[in-house]
Figure 1 (cartoon, rainbow, N blue to C red):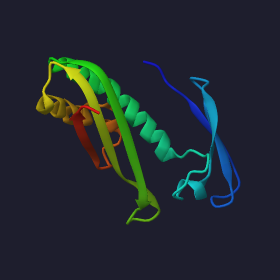
Figure 2: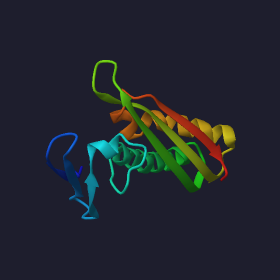
Figure 3: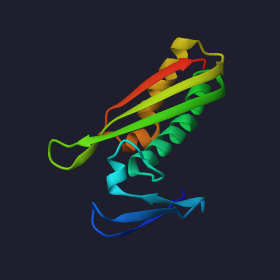
Length: 146
């Protein structure tokens, strides 16, 4: 199985420093990162580990749910997955991921609403990124339609 690589070059301290994260494997780009912007409400053109985790989780969940729907006897036509990753204080000190909310809306043939929701709940447990994030509370809001 393949290994994917990203590299971050950071200069300076935590509060006054900045970095650039490069997607090496895909060559898709290099993105600015900053701790003050990481914990601010507005990202102002920078990304963060939380946004990168959200992207990874949304894409992994969509792929895994597509397979889960097929295994349940349905045919996925379209899936829109949003992952909201929250960060906050860790009672043990520092910061931690405080939750991930996956919202999925799907167009599926062969499954009713209950079957779709069950496939999404099963996928929440079986998705490789969900497995990697077992220390974080993950919730799913799944429904058929837009």
